[in-house]
Amino acid sequence: MQIKRLSAKIDEFSLPASVVMDASVAIPTVKSKWYMKYGEHAYYFMDFRTLKGLRIRIPHLDIIRPGWQRLRKAAKKQGKHVSMFRPLTLRYHYRFNILEQIMLMTVPHTVTSIGNGRFIVNLWSWCGYLEVDTVTKTVTYHTIDEVDDDSVLGSQQWFDPQTKDLYAMSYSLSDSVGRIDNPVHSVAFRIFKHKLGENGTETVWRGELSDYMHDILINESRQYCVVCELGMYLDEKKDIIPSKAMVIDIKNKKQWVIDHFIVAAHAFFDPNVPNIVYFSNHNFEFEHSNIIKLLEKGGYSVKFRGPASIYKYELTPDGPREIGVFTQDDFFRLTNMHVFKHRNLKIIAAMGFPDVIFLINADSMSFIRKITVKDPISLKHFYSRKPALIGTIAPSPDGEKLFVQTTGSFQIVDVSTGNPEYIRDYFFRHVCFNHMLALNDSKWEQKEGK
Image (cartoon, rainbow, N blue to C red; front, side, top):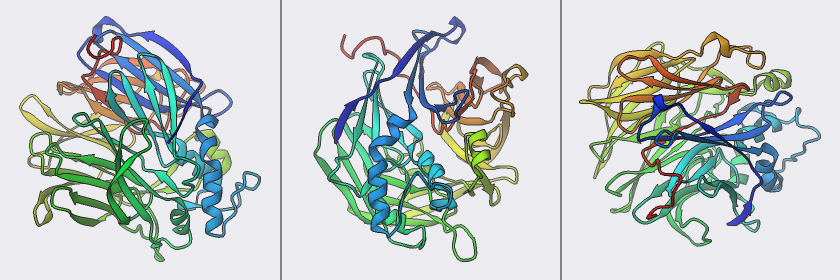
């Protein structure tokens, strides 16, 4: 990997005493400017123990530049020409133009905590990831070596605190470009583990699977690794080709592919039973937007193909076995879900569209209730003319609160009552916040062992 220090603008802010708790959050977003919706990345870190927060801003172009030539080379291998001088005529994945495609691939997607106030910000599908150190207040960009011009990383990494290994995914970018004309084109895919800042990697699995690999996680016993694809490719009948989710039994060298979810973007292991896993089935597709609408919204248009669903699986020596499912007629989008303990109840909190959180009993896979999250009218300011949309959620470590990010605010919502207890207003609209991380590592002001 190549490592480069990025220039970042860092602002500190204070949080009110009313929100003190042993918890912290990290939220990756794209922040609008008055002249551009995709002007810069903005990462928010809030420590509710010290009541301190950081906002780290990086120009979006600094994220894009290292991968531009890699994308051009990969497209050339498939007989396609990538040029910013004719971005509106060519079509890429999801019928996107080149501007939409690069915007999608370079937005921040997830955050991985690696301890001592350090975090990995994973991009959607680009050639690197960012390391943020909230103690030294520095940002470094880790990018794949230029000699390896045919792979990009998946949207997530998983950190093993016991071994200090980062588990990651990569796939062939030129194979991915080949899927534009042929959605069933095979894609070389790899799961590997590595140490932060070191060049050496160890392959966990290698073969042909898919592109736009979106999630990776390993259960508590370190036996099962699960990876998920964000597909949304259409067949000749314009139906979505089901995404792939792969389960790997690391100890026994076995693997199984589940391919009947519409969009199997994410998975979550049960907090009590290490061989129980929940899969989210989004059931929507991206749609191309004209350039005016794209620049105005600063986000993507989606088309719902019906309600979303959550599948519950048991991982057995003979393979994954479905043991439950939840869906509901008004359950749409489902871009975030978490499984956690709230007092004596195991709950799935799942984000619905446009401003709803579904609470589901994880044991019975039955509906509990909904929480509606809305920004106050005062937040619908000039730069955010449309109502704010919910974007990402995460439960507090004690299961009592839900942290919620919308396009106009950050909120702390009480799980029992559904009422907001704190709202932090954003002046400019925020988009593409994707996945927030909540954790109880809230000692950013000092190094471990100090």
